[in-house]
View 1: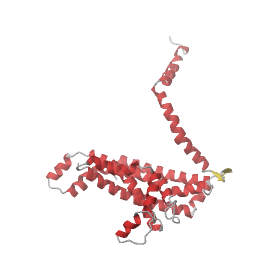
View 2: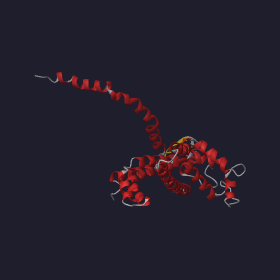
View 3: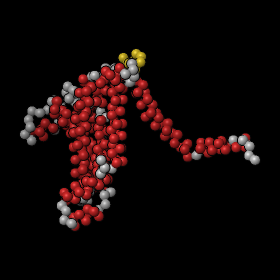
View 4: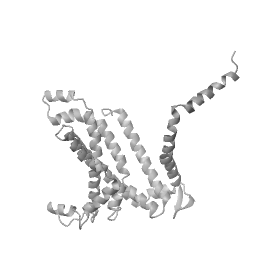
Length: 302
């Protein structure tokens, strides 16, 4: 007969085995994740509910920061500028990345050099990219104005006009991040089985027909994931645009991130800035949830 007291050591042995087991190796990673991710997120949410002025905590503000942000015309303008920026950048980068991936996937001569040359812009730090393109766009020593002059466009200083500055920022982003789309889509193309493509060619299908009827449907999940990842990344663009234009001229290139930065550090309204960031985080989470849902449903389901 086994008494209740004799059965007590078993949980202790199991607990000791868990502590001494492989799970303990996850503790440093969990602490690092909490330090760089969980704590800043929790601090930001708490700070968005408080009122700050000149770095001093003025007390609990509740939802006032969120209401003020949603009624801020400058914030809505920055949101619209960010939306246009993200749509243009992601669209152009997707088309260019797909075209380059299709080209390199044909096993051209010097494919390795092509790959290195294409991904090179992505390896440069964003701040360095901003400085480099600021020199390119400079009206006195830059090469942008002379090149535009050769193309018949005179008197346009890229960073001097609102429309040209916005297009200049988009061009910078396209140059820097098209390689990311290229790498993802090239990896997707290399996983596509060749037998259906060869069968379609033997049946007399043209290259365009093979692409739209076979390659694109099989590439669609990878293409969708690449677009979602790049969209989420583009929403938080800050470094290179801030170095290049600081949001000017006027507010033509003032993205959401730049306005939040100015609100926190120039206008010393940390609570409102945190509210903006939390709203953006909520939007990104919704976008990511929709993306995961669509990927699970599959490209052919509605």
